[in-house]
Length: 191
Image 1 (spheres, helix red, strand yellow):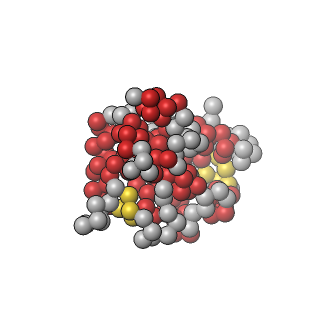
Image 2 (cartoon, one colour):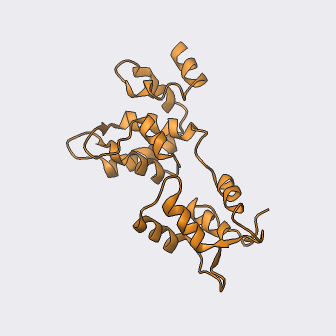
Image 3 (spheres, rainbow, N blue to C red):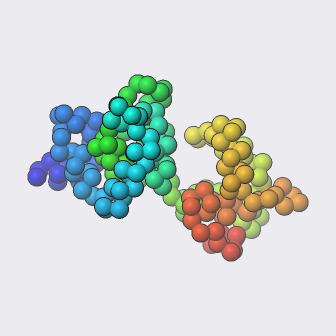
């Protein structure tokens, strides 16, 4: 019982400890207790898609991919603190670990949300009309923060970006809405 209270009080500090299921077997179930049955079912569905047959888990290299497919937005650095690896074949993640990692990532306050992204792109909206240069956005996606590959950037632009206007600008609110799987608002000007 005391461990459960402790885990709720300082979940970030326990990130490294959560990898040691042998030392702290209750930690994984405690974090999972915060999830709904529907969330756990979705987690299991995604897990089964990536589970390597005969291994009982998936390669930790894909941890970020699985978390993002469940609607979370953890940074690469945070994924590594959870137990994700930068190289394939180094570690396997089982279902219990994955549920705990999902709960930890869901509770992570450092992941950006839709409104944060709007505020960020407002900085590049020189005319304050909801538009920014498409070339600038592409440049940022390829070169800043957690950089996308050329192929990833092409896919994001193709799937989420509106056509450029005559000045090479795009409305960034619809772009962000599609990226964050939100309804695309009719008004492109940020409030």
